Amino acid sequence: MSATEDKLRAAFREALGLATTTDVEPLTYRGIPQWDSVAHMQLVAAIETAFDIMLDTDDVLAMSSYAKAREIVGKYGVAP
Amino acid sequence: MVWRPEGPLLAGRTAFVTGGTRGIGWEVARTLAAHGAAVAISGRRDDVVAERAAALATEFGVATLGLIADVADPDAVKASYQAIFKAWKQLDVLVNNAGVLDGGLLGMIGADVIDRVIDTNAKGAIHNLQAAARLMSRHKRGSIVNLTSILGTHGDTGQAVYAASKAAVIGLTLAAAKELAPQGIRVNAIAPGYVDTEMVQALPADVQARQLATIGMGRAGTPDDVARAVLFFASDLSTYVTGQVLGVDGGMRI
Image (cartoon, rainbow over all chains, first blue to last red; front, side):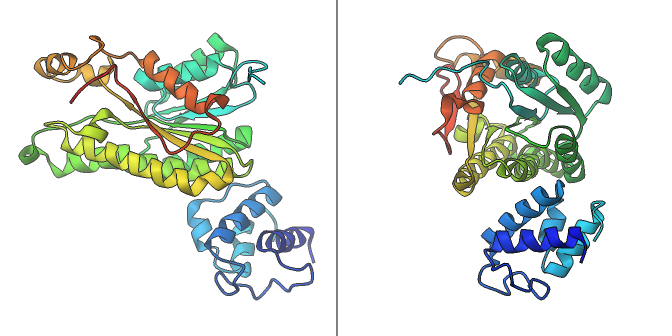
């Protein structure tokens, strides 16, 4: 597992208040109670801070799953 | 204990003034820079933006950024914030100032005028506020100052579209203030009255005379009058103030 992937997983767990053992791979927006619209913005902030990037609003709206988040982060020059 | 600033009011802060190359926006940019803020300004003409950004840096010794952007273009707005993020990593103050004034009697307003005024004054303010709030939320602090108008609070003959666009800015201010307060971001609006700028100088002479006659203080406002109010909202002078619309109009009655 890459350091980038570790950072993304950590950002998800921290922003959504999940245990460090939680498997984030299958997570989808509104698929769990913790990932609601308020938490989504906290998640965006956590990802931006972790990778020192600023996401476009279109990407914020498109980030509907962990897999999609990985793909989006990759667009900003961060190796997936 | 009495609060006293330990240094310049905006030392260590970064600010972005849309439409910051002339009129009220230029005076606001100068005032924020004079109080220690690093200031980004945007405008549509690259030569003017570069000249003004350099002038600010020279006069006040602060970092500046000149951004070419039409606020009616969402992609240009995005690019502005990417540039601010790249340069400074943070934004503490947004002054949503860019605007256009165009009017006419209700039966004589073309669709092109409606689109241009709403796209610039209302949609432009929303796009900027969205992006600014994202940058500010990282540090859990920020101040957004939206420029509305006395026409947005009271309306006037011949200015239905402009008034509608500025009323939209007030709604944006009130809603965003509620949504962003938990993140430490304050959102307020300033409603200037009749301010002596190129924009109002373009109004017909009879309209200008009629408006001057309605001002209790007997004079037109100046960009500096407005800039001082912006400084209040932008700085720690207003740490517990959000969701307010402050008239800066010399007692104007419409």
